Length: 335
Image (tube, rainbow, N blue to C red; front, top):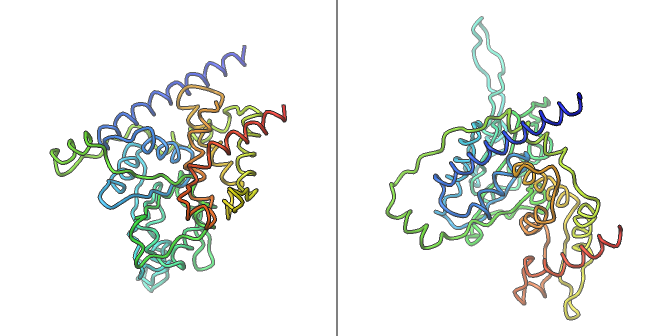
C-alpha cells in the first residue's frame, strides 16, 4: 500500500514537472524564434541537469538573449561576464576589499564576483587570457570558489554558458582541452531560416524576456529525479563503446583520423542529459533516441581530428554513423 502511494506521488510530481517544463519551452519559443529541437531544448536540458554549455555562433544570432531568456524562465539569478584580454581572475571570482566597519575601524570584506549566480554567461570566453579562463575551472567542476585561502560555495543550481565566435580568431586564446571537456555540450547557433529572419527584421527592436515558470528549487528537484531514471545495460555499454572507439585512433585510407578522443566525462554527460530528456517527457527509462540526440554535441568539442582528416574536410559529424554502428554492435555482444 505504501509503495503504491509513493509510486503515485512520484508519477504526480513527474507529470507536473513535465507540464511546467513544456510551458517553459513554449514561453522560450515566443521569445527566441526557431531552433527549438537543436538548440533551445538541449541548452535548457543542460541547465536542468546542472551542466555547462558552450555556444558557438556568429555575432548577432541571439546567443546572449537566449541565455538570459532561459534564466528568466527558470527564475534563476543571472550574471554576465564580458570576457576581454584585460579581465583578471578576481574580476570573475571576487576579491577582498578594505572597508570601514559600522562599529568603527576597518576590515577586509569579500565582495562576490559575477560567478556567484545560478546561471552565468561568459560572453566571448575565448577572449579572456588563460589565467582568467582557469579561474572558472574550480567553479565548473566543484561548484565552489577558493579565494584568499577560503573556499566559498556557489549558489545552487549553478551552470555556466560560454559563447565564442568560431570565425574571428584575432586576439583570442583558444580554450584548452581540459576546459573544453568541462562543457557537457557544444551547441552551434546557426543562421536563422528565411521565415524566422523575416519575423526578426520586421519585429519590435527589443524582445521581452519570458515570465518565470520554474524556480531554482524545481531545477534541483529535476536534477535529483533524473538520476532515478533507468538506463538499460545495453545503452550504458553503447555509450561506453562510443567513447572507447574515439580513443582507438582508427585509420581512414591508411591515415589517422582521431588525434584525441572523448573522456569518460563525455559518456557521463550524454547519459545525464538523456535522463533529463526522458524525465521531462514523462518517461522513467532512457531510449536510444534520447542518447543519440546528445552524442554529436557532446563529442563535437571533445574529439580532435588529425591533420589528414581535417585536410579532407572530415568532421566529427561525418564519423558518427560508423561510430554508432560499431558501438551498438559492440554493446549488443555484451548481452
